[in-house]
Length: 261
Ligand SMILES: N[C@@H]1[C@@H](O)[C@H](O)[C@@H](COP(=O)(O)O)O[C@@H]1O
Image 1 (cartoon, helix red, strand yellow):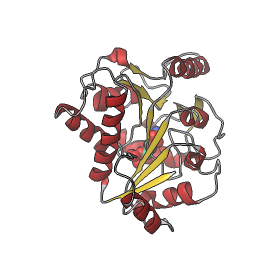
Image 2 (spheres, protein in one colour; image 1 turned 60 degrees about the horizontal axis):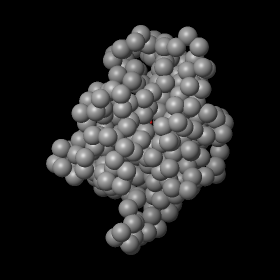
Image 3 (cartoon, protein in one colour; image 1 turned 30 degrees about the horizontal axis):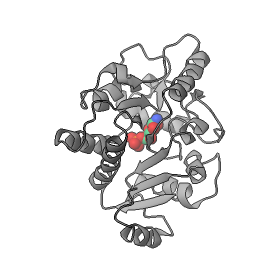
């Protein structure tokens, strides 16, 4: 696992957007897994700016969702499908045919989850998966004690996550669904490159446990330690509880120029 400590969220967004541009230069139809929440927004802003400035042709890029609420009416503005369309797919000028996600309104939820895992595999697998992290260490919506081998499935949110996400629902927790579909931790680990961005002091404990703690289903993001190509990008505040922060800075500063993240 590589840990990169950046000055702020904007710098983190630019670094990760640069890695996506490099990926698209190598593989124009790369499948890019995107996350929701506030943290990844600087990545999408920087990516759209770099693409608009001509850094790469992103017109063949494919986008896929990490997770979804269950039971929101189709087209609800806070469904993750609507969110990703608004924040990533439309700003990049991509057609909906290049976007895939699980069906959160399916009657048979497990069949929709299985279908999504199959769709990801037959699309050739995710090339780069962007991840945020919950204050409890969750990735996607894999709450603590999710199986590290889990596949896409329905989960029940813990109360803290519903409280954290109420800000997207008029600060009314009653509007936040209890159930979600999420790529499993095993599904996430199938991606070729995992890039987790965490910013702000509120994520410092979760980041320290993810990077320096034991691999444990109690901290789902710690499963990144099992991955061959995982990059954790953190700002100074989110890095504030890392014991090896100086080493991580030294290693990044001395990387060969040709080696991206
Ligand atoms: N399902 C999403 C996660 O993918 C995201 O990482 C998390 C943190 O969001 P934020 O970045 O807003 O703190 O929120 C939700 O639970």
